[in-house]
Length: 75
Image (cartoon, rainbow, N blue to C red; front, side, top):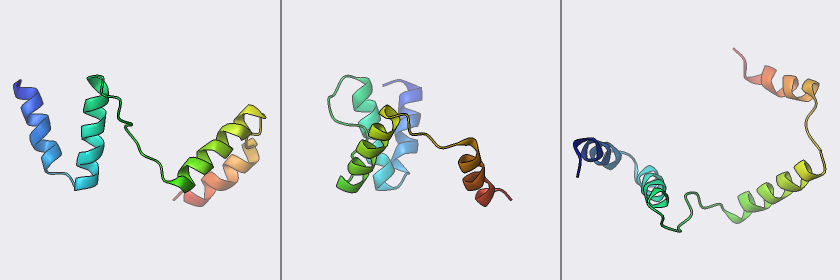
């Protein structure tokens, strides 16, 4: 194992377990493992499917709608 990979592994080991799982999935995907990097809940999967359908229909937020949402989070 290279020094850099060893350092990365040690850093990942210090992360919370959920983040360790995500890092492991990314590394496995990099080397050709077929496991998904991100696993969606049924609700997230439904939201994604609906968002993709909206995109295909060309239903995007207007500039005014984006500005209205963005202004809520500006300091």
